[in-house]
Image (tube, rainbow over all chains, first blue to last red; front, side, top):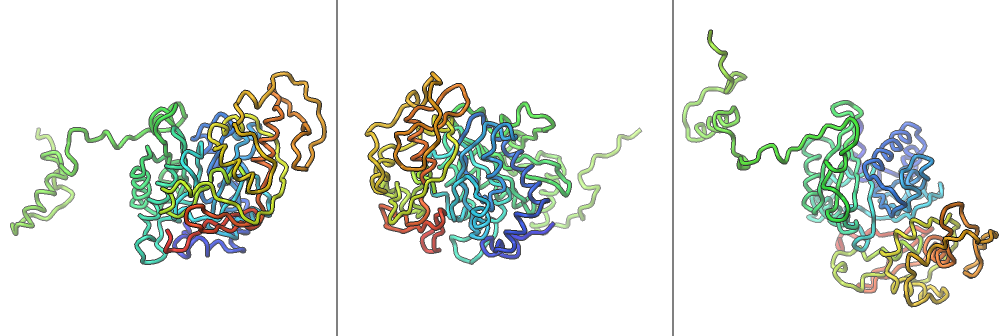
Length: 282
Length: 155
């Protein structure tokens, strides 16, 4: 998988040629369109709403937002405001004459809207760009960018609003970093993964703002959807303190061995048999 | 950039966020343009409670548009249940006293709704600058796209 975010910052990577390539490629268009439809399905909007498109690029996702229900946009046509850091991408969007309003802004610098502006927000293939540090300054770390973005997004959504951010996490650490930042900002967050484990895996971060008519978090969002398995990591270890292993488990044994090793005692090497149950004797 | 967007934009600088003067941004040297769009009555009804009417009036005055009524319209003002509006061709001028073609639907948008639609969704700022009332930072608008990128020391 190619990772353009590893090579250059977004405003430099998406220059005129790259923007045009991105927008005219039929493959990218079809992927973006299917992801936008999926995001809209998760947003479950029923009436024309005010939507924020973060990292709107050339307006591939915005075009879908302005379509009518007859063209496959539930609750449409929506009014949207999009922002992107790449001027070239916005230039392509202007040429295409998209209906939404465009802003040149960096999501990592915050979201410049007053509280309660939007009914919903979408972001297609953008959030992974925030996970890069361009300089060594304190305000420019991935954590600071993500925190500014999610704090701003949380404030600009109305109570009971939803946001769906599709992004390409590089690894589990990045996935965790992004969702932790969203939770820290106050969102109810959950990850939805389509085609998990395959090359076509798509990760959607489903964010909910409490209050209003919304029921709960992502588990409420996907209720009634076909083919979705819910795996709730929050309730797995109730009653067990964080970082504490069950006595006798493999994790506990490994912890004890490490502890003994630190005390300078001789400890047997750890193998696949460590902490394994003995076969029941005849 | 639509005037509707301007009613939601604040200054992007963090220290300004807490200052009430950071909203609304004041347009200067603005070139306006009318971009025709289909009227979307459910959207107008949806967005109406979120509009800050006083600020819309201020901005309209600063842009030299005709004076707006001092009270915001109510959702019931926006539609007339009888579909008796005679269709006529939509005009591009800013004068707001000619009826537009009514879309096929259960509710017909009233004159108030048409005016509101013309003001918020069809009037666009093409060129100019937006000035923050608190810190005086200027955001340039070019070809209808406002530049909200901040230099590093202001983030």
